[in-house]
Image (tube, rainbow, N blue to C red; front, side, top):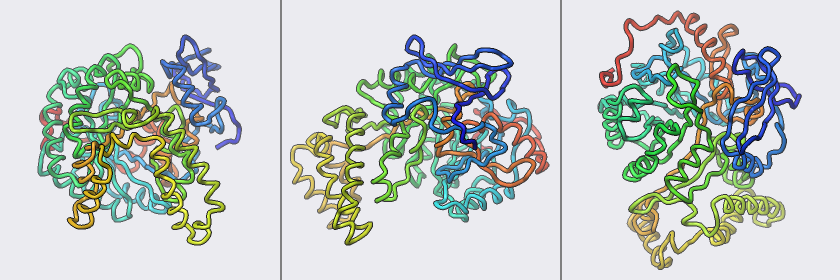
Length: 514
């Protein structure tokens, strides 16, 4: 990586690496590039300039870039310890959605490496401290009949595993049970519960039937809660957000996170929108379906230095660029989800800012705290714990959370936990006004025109791969992987002499038993 602070991007036309700057016009934000080959090129990156720049202010981010890099990722190893490592398991798929470029048909070659390939990567990743989580990507990882063996291999290196899946094969209950028995965390793709969504976006309305069956199987055999990935396109499925949230509320016992992925117009061969959906588009669509919802940049969470240090907190998306992922929280009662603001004395963003100010004050106080000096880290934890109730009372509408009789609630919680041996969180749901929490994330998968080198410098997520020439294991930032991956995986397939499948993958309606 270079020390030169010049923000860079790719020209969408010729793919040259060029300097880039932000341009605001008509409350929209564009990345402007002066390409020596193609001339002036602009890419729309936000439909709400005010919100786009507010995120930067929240994260105290000024100017075009703090640090940047060359974007020549094949010659670089990113140079950091990742929190989450993604790994392409295959490019075979049992759906082959027309909007996707990550399947065999779109890529033009077969990538389905042997288990030795994964063993080499796991061995390299296990040397990091702390060890990252491994997330299997595709294609569709579950079309590999050895996926369970690969997950067990990762666990043998003490690498927690996650699987991104369209869920089709999990409609087979026996397979679903076998996969979930490994303890892997599931990221399940579900774009809504209306067949028209799948007809338009996925080319197969029958996929919904299989996904619903798979979700029932997951609910039955899960070891932990799951994350749902919803690709959202304005004019495609944004009108179904309210229905989707109600659907998840009914299943809040096993769905913990909803990640929205803004749909881009350029990835796949089929275009179903005139303009890419931006992060701010998703935020506005969610707020329209549930008035009062507020998002904050995920990178904002990394600024809580005192809490992270004292309690060893690992925040996966913490540190991300302010214009990358954004997050919010929905709180459930027995009827539906509510925005976090309904339970706060001030807007969600202000409450987060107040908490950050508290974190910084406590960082200074811990330097002179007698508890910290006497008992070290345990003393710091005790001092922070003593200060948290005041922070909560200042920001949270406690009466709405625990009801009008707080002492009665506390007695029930203590009696149920200490005497009856019941789970604390179940007792909270039973006796308080809260029956669950849904974390919501807007998770952009970058189109090449959106990419800027300033966003890579603190990216906590990377793809792991074997360099096709040097044959050593390296890392590449999440966003640039989609620019370089075809070149890398094509050569890797040749290196491992991967043979193409005998026949094309079965369509979604036929693929349950794959």
